[in-house]
Image 1 (cartoon, rainbow, N blue to C red):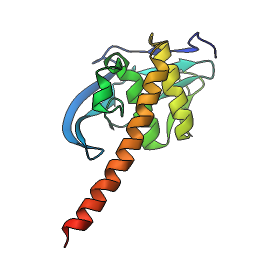
Image 2: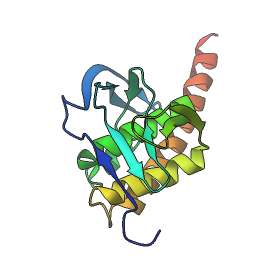
Image 3: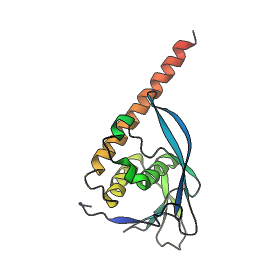
Image 4: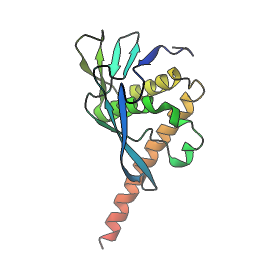
Length: 166
């Protein structure tokens, strides 16, 4: 793949090809609070990723996103706000286990399962395509750190609930 992005997003204007709405805040990793948003595609020309293989879209229904599972202390360091679209695609791939794919835009779409590792590599590619050549690796590292902290925080919360029962 090299340093040159091998794909691009189509219909990227918010409110035309996609939309994002805040829905709630929730505890994150047992340590912080994070905002949760509802991400949805707007038809007839929804947000789409185009690459050499074909066209990719997140789940056709509304999906939740936290705009990157990056720990709040690292959000001040990592330029995550300019990569909303890649985070929405990544969260959809993680939560749904894949993305929708089609060889041609007007063809038949089918769901393609993606491993979490492949979803992470696609996040790096999507960030790079939006000008994040230097940000792609730190953002991927931030997401991985965030996932570990969430896992640790959930375990800590379960432990504390067990202790509080008496």
